Amino acid sequence: ILGDGLFVDRISAWSTHFDSLTEITPEAMEKYAAIIVQGKALEGLADVSALKEFVTRGGTLYIQGLSFWAEKTLDSLLPGLQWEPMSGHQVAFHANDPLTDGLNSSDFRWCDDGKDGAITNLHPIAHSMVTVAGAKAITTPAVLSLVPMGKGRIVIDQIDWPTTRSAK
Image (cartoon, rainbow, N blue to C red):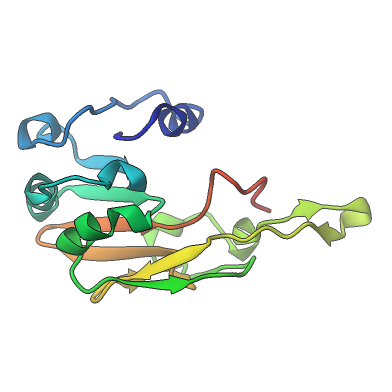
């Protein structure tokens, strides 16, 4: 995992089976099959060749939360990306992908349960969205998508996990 302290803490709440990376080099990544990167950790990254090499050789790069500030880095990693405004509280997913196995559409509705089961306080699921040429959308809108690269893939997760209160 590569990200700030809050990001690493959030991941550690789900699992303790991970290592924290402090640098993006071929040597630092060679023993891993998958790397989770906080989008803002890509800001100002001058060289993405190590990430490209990791994915091309068969690794999975999972990018969570993208930032406009990382646009130059992202553009060199994912040519053809476009930013789009995003609003909405519901996401439909395509169940034919292992990334969403065991989930259903109600797992992607951001809201608070009110009295007698009424839905209240809808929260936006994402604030902006990147589309990438050649990406496979796992959800509609494409807040989860896959970009094949060589023998590996990049997973782009644009769901606003830190600011949403619950996924119902």
